[in-house]
Length: 281
Image 1 (cartoon, rainbow, N blue to C red):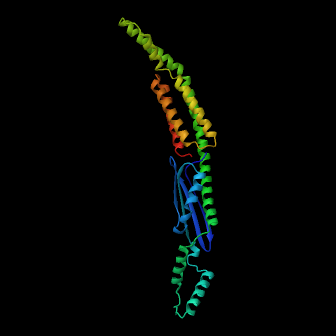
Image 2 (cartoon, rainbow, N blue to C red):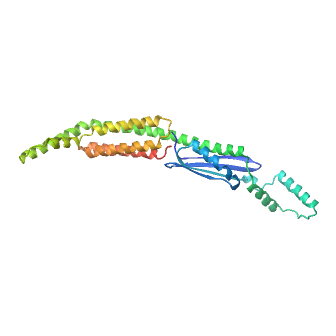
Image 3 (tube, rainbow, N blue to C red):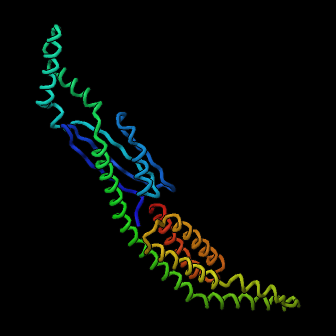
């Protein structure tokens, strides 16, 4: 089980330039991909998108790549760069041109201008991005394990709750029969005969056994889903809707306050599961 929220970053230092890839993901019903690459690396967007699609099925995933000199390197000019500047100055002078001495600030501007067009080798770029996305996947898995533990706790609580309602089923049936007897007495007083079909319909409207059986069936499927290694978010959301429907019916059919109160508790537990369903892959 994997959560849909996560964050990771990876860095690579190359020729005094620090490349950084930040990957983050948020909840989404589907897989949404947003990739931000420097202009000179835009050509790599296709394989990055394809790699994400192979490793993630749901979530809004943002990948942002940028590069800059580390703080301690921002004011540093490498020997190789200075040597290159000197060599080019000599070549220009050989062609009869006079060149004024470059100031420190001018050298920094030249260096920064060159770095803006720096192109990272594809193998290095792939390594940087894959490391970031694999870490993102790992953080989603770690959070998913925590979610799984809580879902298992909620399933246990729901089993106890529906079991408690099952125990109160007889009391609910007795209350239904009392209601029917009062109905009989009222009809007798009015010298009317009891309509058998209406009597059965009245009893059926208070019978919650069918809803309890269906609820337990859905709950078993939820428990099985949680234990699986598949993507479960959409299915889990569907089962919570089904369990909510059964609970609402149980509450509406209940004639005793205890079942209605337990149904409220059960609805609260289902809502918690539903919240988790919105956050897992």
